[in-house]
Image (cartoon, rainbow over all chains, first blue to last red; front, side):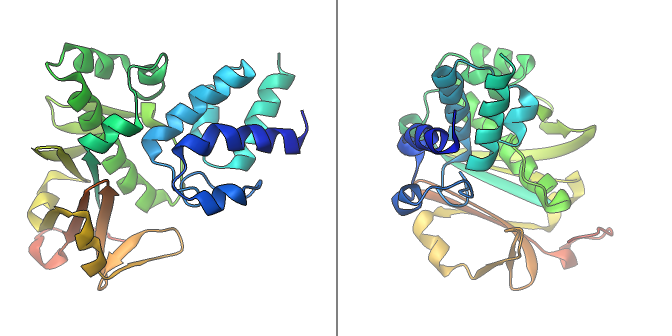
Length: 84
Length: 171
């Protein structure tokens, strides 16, 4: 799955939890879920569960630990999909 | 070192559905889940435990300057009043009033005596002259502070070194 498709999919997932709409419209690999989108840390777990459901993967605890931004999310999704 | 976290239970109810399949397993240990499910008010128990983990995460982040999302590594015991992270035991105190849970954690229990704790309306934040360093670690007029905000509530904890008899390395 290419980068652009993944960013679009992540954008859809994070949308309901995002407090900064402008940052969401400008989402890129460098977007931080907490600092830029101002997502509450208790909702990061929802994003992880949504990613698991959408891509049919399991995000292990080590991956979850660094899933704080779009770049890490892309890397994790790609590596889990490649490992299937 | 100090950390605090505040939860607006009313907002938490709207923002999060903790009964969601898989939710508890991602953030709470088996013992913590037992505590939640045995509680008379499981929703409040969820946010109490969560605020404890967040408060101690802020202490750890202040030390390491590394951001992580690893709630399972913070083991909270409400009966002991502590959170254990990587072998270190952090005492906490939690104040609950109406829809507000405010939890304050410290590196060692004696530090509670050196704290000024404010549990306020969120609007009050505008009056706090907070500065942050490059890692987002907050200060108030040079003193280390911990701040938090959720919904209608805001928390501020100020460490006053002249109220503390021991020695402590504060960043």
